[in-house]
Amino acid sequence: MPAQIGVTGLAVMGANLARNFARNGYTVALHNRSVAKTDALLAAHGDEGDFIRTETLAELVENLEVPRRVLIMVKAGAPVDAVIEQLVPLLEAGDIVIDAGNSHYEDTRRREAALAEKGLHFVGVGVSGGEEGALLGPSIMPGGSRESYDALGPMLEKISAKVDGEPCCAWIGTDGAGHFVKMVHNGIEYADMQVIGEAYDLLRSGAGIEPAEQAAIFADWNKGDLASFLIEITAEVLGHVDAKTGKPFIDVVVDSAGQKGTGRWTVVSGLDLGSPVSGIAESVFARALSSQRGQRAEAQTALEGAVSEVALPENFVEDVRQALYASKLVSYAQGLDMLTSAAGEYGWDLKLDEIASLWRAGCIIRAELLKDITKAYAGGARPANLLFAPAFRDAIAAALPAWRRVVATAVQLGIPVPVFSSSLAYYDGLRRDRLPAALTQGLRDLFGAHTYGRIDAEGTFHTLWGGDKSEVAAVDTH
Ligand code: NDP
Image (tube, rainbow, N blue to C red):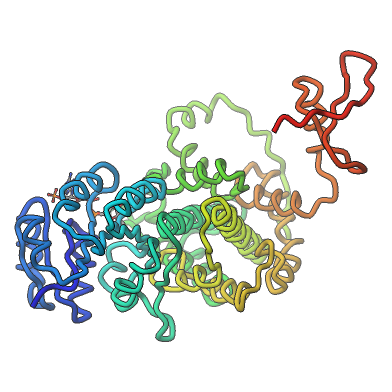
């Protein structure tokens, strides 16, 4: 019997996705550049379902039912192009090439356009949930043509995570939409982790609460509106004791955070789209600063702190919880706002309720909050900003006094809280009647004749700053 899907690239992610398809009853043809990985997979898990062993891409393609579905799960970047180049001559119009790796959405747009010219479908799929998710049910964000989803979607839905029986997989939009949404998911993940880190730091350095006690606090928080996978595993990490030293595990880990690049991609796209993803940007920068270990060491003696002695607010732990919730909400609001901007730019009809819904399980940012976000956009509701949805507007209003107290206290104590504070600045910036951008416009007009608009007239204007300072209508150069 021909296979319903072929998987090429059988490192950890590809192998687990292949097993997931097989465990769900599909016949899966297997291929890897070096045959050893194919054989290792078959030796360890060949009894989990129907696999077909192949040694070449040509053999892989020969063993597939039509339209052929070939899922590529190799290292992102040039290897994906290399595999596509070898694969394309072996395929026929109507076949579907799937890239389920962490590819940049611009690469996906380019590849989709190139394959469409040959009558092939190219589907860029965002897959979240890591190794375990790939095997047991990830959150899946497929892009590509609607037609390709009809032939592929049911299979992806079957292997995806489920919430109350509903798959965490839905067609996202054309060309790079799936990879874009996955990228923003990862950006939000960065911010989510950073706000947790800021809460930990405030409780430890501000309130002197040791990791073991914090583990209990986070476990408790996980029962309320912060309930999420990341809060759950924070309790686990903080509660862990290093076997070698008997110290809290967190105290023996080098405090310099790594990154693979999807957070940076999100920020770069945010800048390109003019989308204020400040929480995600601060999270990426916080990791970058943590990695500047030489400068940080020198700063220990070179730089003065001049911190203030302040009494902690009475219910500091609860204040921190509320500040964490509010900042987290802002990060989601910013990420979703960026999706709206991208939808306009790239012509995607992104359905924010479906996207929030398919992040509810299987992926790293899975959280109770996402159920409420799904509801906020349900039935075609389109609040211009997530924070305007009544439930969130009220939640932020309730958290605001605590949020301000926490940021003010952190500043006085000299504890950096870049996402707590930038999220508050975003919130205040959004709701402010007049922004100092008017002054920025005045300055730009003075030094560069960049023109400005008036609040009381249509059109653009320029003041003759070097002359009699009279105002003239500016010529529209667009
Ligand atoms: P790797 O990213 O480590 O890639 C290894 C695989 O790529 C091997 O099968 C290797 O073949 C193959 N490969 C590399 N170069 C080429 C080439 N030029 N031609 C053909 N094959 C090549 O594998 P992972 O399983 O860790 O990740 C796969 C993808 O999934 C990546 O895009 C990664 O970013 C993403 N990923 C996603 C995660 C998630 O949570 N969604 C988590 C981890 C990864 P060989 O064995 O012959 O060397």
